[in-house]
Figure (tube, rainbow, N blue to C red):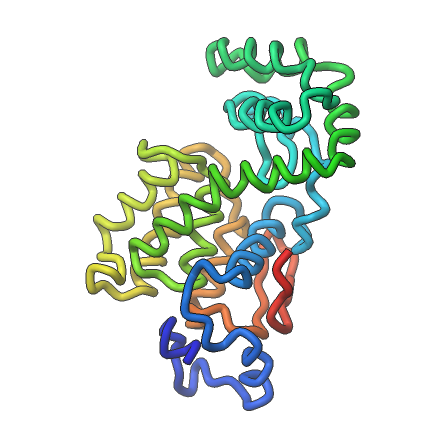
Length: 277
């Protein structure tokens, strides 16, 4: 049923052994993309690109300046002090827990976002150093901050990716690609953002919901995001696009375990259906 729903290719090039097929039975027959197991798989795939581990729950306390022109980057999806999503996260956290370790930084985060883009990285250090990273890590021990991170991730990145995936008729691999593009490129309809990248792909190939070939369409999505990464100067030969090109080559559009993937030269494997977290 899994293969029928999501179009996993069969035949000599993609044949699986009987033992491998039974490994996937735990999640065969799940008919809706909103099933939490698909979300867990997508979160694990993106986590290997963001934090070099499939265990996305290790990233709550992550915080550093990675010299990408976006100031401090932190948390589950890499909220940035220079792009506004970190400000929104801290606002949401403060609404839930007013006396939190990060509430006092709201004026500084607002001041950073009031400045021109090019000034934000330097302002992030001038206004937030030296205590902000330590206070972020301390906040990560607070269940309220962990909830805020998960809720903002879902509101800003996961929810729009799921909605678009359902609209376009893609399966679990498509959903995982959409989520990764959403996290990496951010919301919006300009050419460099999530909506714009999907629009570029649709010009090259029709999505499945419009009668197009799913694999060809998803390859167009990957190509469109790679073009943006190259324009940013962020493209790496074995970067995060390798996750998706490798899985597309296997024809496993349903992400039926077991399967493996590579990113930044590291190899990972999902042996069986993961428990959603």
